[in-house]
Amino acid sequence: MSDLLKRVAIVGSGNWGSTIAKIVGTNILKFNTFENEIRMYVYEELVDGRKLTEIINQEHENIKYLPGHKFSHNVVAYADAVETVKDADILLFVLPHQFVEIICNAIKSHVKKTAFIVSFSKGFYVSQDKRVDLLSTVVSSLLEVPCYVLMGANIANEVAAGTFCEATVGSRNYEHGQIVKGLLQTDEFRIVIKPDAEVIEVLGALKNIVAVAAGFSDGLGYGDNTKAAVIRLGLKEMVKFCEEFFPGHHPHIFLESCGVADLVTTCYGGRNRKIVCIVTLALHIHHVITKDKDDIAHKIQALIPTCFLILYYTFGLVSIYRFHRVGILLFASIGIILFMAACLFFSWIIFLLVSLVLDHNIMSKMFGFFVLFGLLFGTFVTIVIATLELAFNLTKLIQMHGYTTF
Ligand SMILES: NC(=O)c1ccc[n+]([C@@H]2O[C@H](COP(=O)([O-])OP(=O)(O)OC[C@H]3O[C@@H](n4cnc5c(N)ncnc54)[C@H](O)[C@@H]3O)[C@@H](O)[C@H]2O)c1
Image (tube, rainbow, N blue to C red):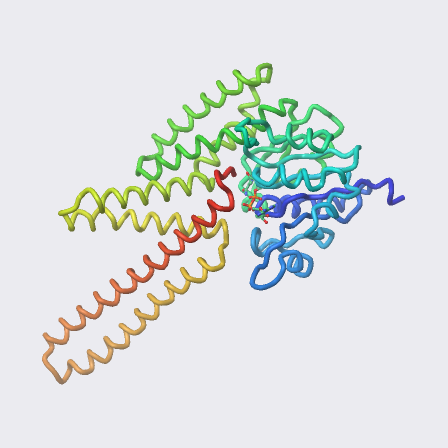
């Protein structure tokens, strides 16, 4: 009997991979045509001194990439990609684009000839000789099985939290498309199947370029009108690109979740936009410091709002990536400020008491000095810690992703 049941494997366990595991893990239990166990390939790493696979299998949670969300117990983490895909009939590929080729080469001779793949990765494949290709084309040619795609306005944390959204599956195979829909659709996650697979995939990559422009616009402090123009012009370019390189698609495809919806989401909430926005703000700081050499007052005036914006976006990134170190340090900086406020409060009480017996005027001046010193010192410590951590994490981020696509 068990030989007749189909097996599903998930390759990738980042923010999106874990979200997909959460959905499919629960959905699969509704069917009697699938094996309940879902193997999930996890790139092994240590988190708080423990192996990530062990944490997932014991706590049923990916505390690094999707903290706060539990998997159903049938999702099992494997550190070995070959073990994960062995015997699987449906492989859900949720890897960052730069790891797709490496993993395909590793599992090549272990994928069932009758299997099919669904790629969730957004981005293009760029070969060493700078040839650009679709990731699904690379996957299906390396593994010699069909590869479909799923794209859409899907910020992983929101999907995992169960807020309503939609996605587009690109598949010309009706039966396979329906299986994918059955595995993924929930009341809050609506799946639409369309045959224009290539264009659907291309849109998932191109929207990131527009998001970079949106990040520049935000970083330069332009408003929503400018961003709307960036989005409109970007969409026009995306349509033109698809008409040029993938003629014959249905024009309505741009109105699906993979088109305009994904573009809007990425230009408002995506990680690319946030990173570019921070870099643009940092360039602004550099410009102010180096160009207006003499005017200290102007420098301070120009830099304060920028520093606050950087902190704001840094917090945004921290909440996405959950880099524990940053979280703890930012938390610690807030702690320092609170501690100082408490010290100031108590010293104020003491000063009040002492001022009852001494000259009132001198005491109030000294109190003003202490307040100012405490606040300035607290702000300084916070900004230094946050900036160091930001630099550390941006370097880490760029090393990890290269050109990021989300
Ligand atoms: N996060 C989202 O909101 C979202 C939404 C839709 C689509 N996507 C797409 O899904 C894909 C995966 O994104 P994500 O957000 O899950 O990734 P992520 O950035 O959250 O995680 C990175 C993953 O890469 C793994 N990794 C690190 N080094 C590796 C290596 N050398 N080999 C193999 N794996 C390694 C990590 O373990 C982790 O699982 C991307 O193409 C992205 O564009 C993401």
